[in-house]
Length: 235
Image (cartoon, rainbow, N blue to C red; front, side, top):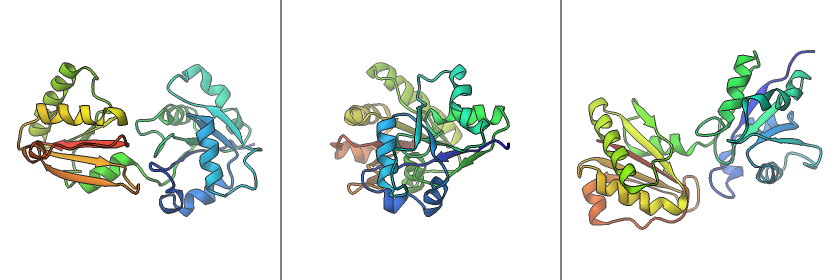
């Protein structure tokens, strides 16, 4: 029996956008997958149900793959693939494997000769970079900055120095309730001529992607909503 394949299944990054941002190729692939690895089974079931692919999602099989998953847990999670069945990896938001535990599953698949198939879908990180007007030729994604204000300021200044020397766009994300704290730290630490992009609710009804120099942001300090955000800058 041939082994199954590992499909990386994109999800929405804004509410109620599945019919506008999820390509038909994803819908078609999902018709042949009934085993899934997901960060949160409840939201994964709700997402698949919203796509209206299955008569019922009750026969589908779900296992948890999250930041607590250990390497030694993976052989059991991959058992369906050894039986010739495909497995789909679902992120909580966007594309699996990008700032996401799905990378662990993809790595394991490569180590064991299992084909990994990434499917096209929305990624807030890449969409923000595309729309920012900042360089996409050389960029670095740093995930979350330190919560401590002093440590965050030090990190920002270090990355700004790197941005200037390498002509490199620096990219960060933040927990929605800390958006304004993040923006404040950036405006405090960055040079006034550094270009800063703040991208909010990408693909959603309140989408806002604005790039301007830090000195312009300081004159009109933003009051950001508690929505998913991506922050980018180029010195």
